[in-house]
Length: 434
Image (cartoon, rainbow, N blue to C red; front, side, top):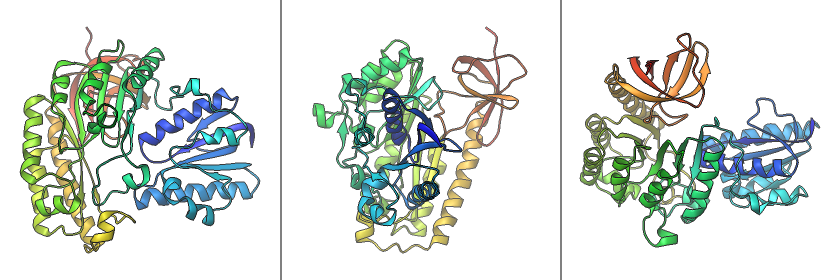
């Protein structure tokens, strides 16, 4: 057990990661040595930043807490703290079930942890983050919460109403991160297209992205977690006119069948969804759309599922994830619908959908063979340098593999590469001498 050392363990999404990075910086400013997601935590203090989104994530968070609680009972850990979405949602239950935890915090009051350690939260460092990502890219959280109330989603229950960060605050953070060497920004929010409605009484996401794009040193901006209903069309112009705004949009569509969309409370129809995809591809040529789809929502018939398959065949999404419906306590669907589709049916539908997407992804990747593409290098792994194009977000999207025996490449640098081959998901390339 190392004295004056804190181990932070982050579970869940990149929005949680940003909170952990802020806490990391505050702890360092108060004299602690801090590690993040260490394979073997050895500090005298542990902080678990939890996820409470779906059952699997909740289980992972609870198991992590229990493992650390056992370390504490064995004398290998002095203090254990828990923060994040799970404790925000189930704090009273957790306090009763796992009393070994010294204190639980919600998602928004983690700064009280500093006070409880006998230290002070440094307001002058409120923008500072100790990046846990490679130093050339960072996640940029522009808001919290969500004012949408999709039937299946517990996020509004956990995080509350949508709250935008002031634009100048975000831009100050971008400038600071650029000075530290960050070139690529993954702009994240639970619902980024709603940005600005609470502060400026208008959807200001296009204005914000344009201002970020104009900051010297920002090479790539990638947008995550949009909503198709009432999508701010002025973003199309920003994506067309600024080369450093990646032709990439992560927009969760969830389904295509009108009865399912209505049950999901998505406020969009099948016809409008088809029109949305068509318009996006027409207005932003070459855009790569990432989407998330759900199977097995209450009321999804076999006919509705076949509509979904047909939609995916038509849309040919460059990037797609999917998951099976899981009933979440307190959500609209849990209170109003029976979870009436057997798990084996959900899983069969999910497998069929993902097999279809694998074929589409393979065909999409194959069209890139022979093309010249700008690639950023993330790391070296074995015999390859591993990088990404503007169409690839870290952790979730395909990668570009470049043989390491050709020449030495610099991590975090951009190279012009020719794509030489592809497989179902990844590309292989060689650097073009210029």
